[in-house]
Length: 422
Image 1 (cartoon, helix red, strand yellow):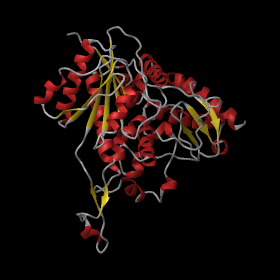
Image 2 (cartoon, helix red, strand yellow; image 1 turned 135 degrees about the horizontal axis):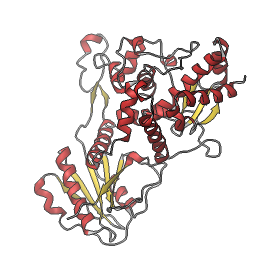
Image 3 (spheres, one colour; image 1 turned 90 degrees about the vertical axis):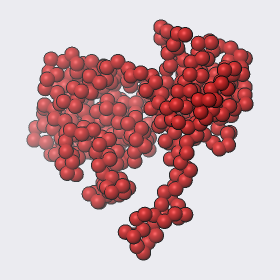
Image 4 (cartoon, rainbow, N blue to C red; image 1 turned 45 degrees about the horizontal axis):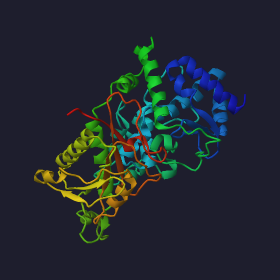
């Protein structure tokens, strides 16, 4: 049997044994490359197999069913990375790609599925390999690798010989595109965030309705329940996204310097190590859509959200009113400055790109830019070095709303804000 046939039969084998995974298994487009050791997956359900590795698994298997169960294990392993949203979680943690790959593998590999077995030719990583408890999430494993506040990757190297020994299963795991990943839409599928999320919810729904739900690993049962749970409050989402953006911006200004001796210099004597330093105070700019398309309710809520950002993060906010042009910035540092927001200039056309560019030209440069708009505006077609978050106001019962183009603007750059009655 050829490697391609074995891979396709293994997918059918998995969908028969574990039917709830079928929506994800059959959403994958199969590719072959010798640039991956065994298998990898990108963020669009393109899965990549090394045919020589698959044939080696087949050679070391006792029976045909044994081959199918081991290749099937690889199938479930790879799609699990996408189902568990490992790439998005890696971005939230600003995780090092290969180290995160190890942590994500540990989260997945301690799940035991009937009739599926880890390939004996290529045994995967287990929590016990690092003296870690089973049943933890990837974030917990990732942070466990950091010892004594040292560099996490170096800490893992104490266990593994070097970076080449660490797995790299593609952007579907850690969010960083790899050379073997195909970007040409004629050769590889390019699913958007909504299509990927629909696959996740389909799998979760199949799990929830399965008669064999009681035999599933506990982590997967909880995952299905969480995936089908109603969405969280948009305010929490906005605060979370803004917090990430601010941390990313502040982090870009921090680096090692010899201006101040490291507190660990006694450990490294006679070497003089640098210490972390830089400007730690955060800066936020907020572009407020004041065009004629913004209703009084939307504009009033935009002002309320600006005040909320100020209260939550306790840092000054620079407001830039904008319709078709950007107006003079307004500094809001304390609640006593709220009166400055009573009459925002505007009422003309709409172009939030102008407001974003005005925000990025501020001195000093902001760490994050929040754009509050109804979405009826031209959107930028490129990402900026400074994180930009779009808060888009929607009316009750509005099914669809304008959003920036994806790519490059992923869904986590956009927060839907339902307009509240006043």
